[in-house]
Image (cartoon, rainbow, N blue to C red; front, side, top):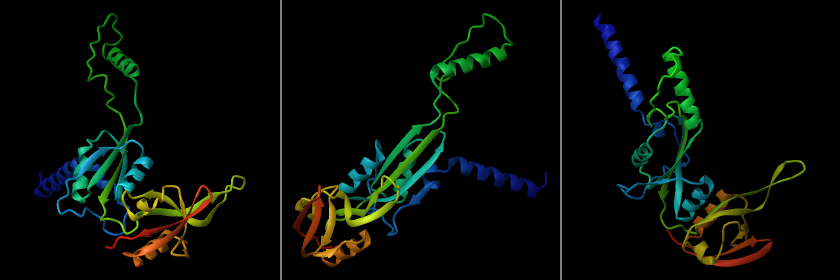
Length: 251
């Protein structure tokens, strides 16, 4: 066999081996932050958790002072969760939440019937054939899973401590959406100035220091400019207008 052909084949086998060892959580990772977000620690002690409910888990992480770095999402055969931890350590995340769900599960009885049919073919329909089945045999070798992981970095103490989004309403008749005045609070960081001022998830912020809040970006800029100062926040809860004072942290 020519040397050149041997070299090409060796390269091919090497490429295939690397592909087999590829970390699918890394390959299917997409960043969600434009700020090169990562842990404040040089060598973070990254924690891995089993995710339960994506929406509730996200809110809990925000309330605990974390911000989302990115996500991994893919389908395929079972992958060990520690692969997500390895990727989280590579990108210097403080925590990773992993979700997995079997999406084509075959019941044990269905798998048993499948084995029985396969054995009948091998034995060419012989009668009274005893089929011995182990626990391993009952596992569905073609099982397919859906994986999802979120990666989080712990933030420094916040200036205010509010996570807000635009307030969007939907017309039940026309199904059209429109933006209303104010910003909806989706999370309040624990022990932050906003938390101490009594603002809660679900409140709608209408004004910051008497200036209307038009977008999350403008709101963040206004908060940043007032760091270290005492500010006034106007918001609504259950259609009741409230005004509170908050003393902002300084970064």
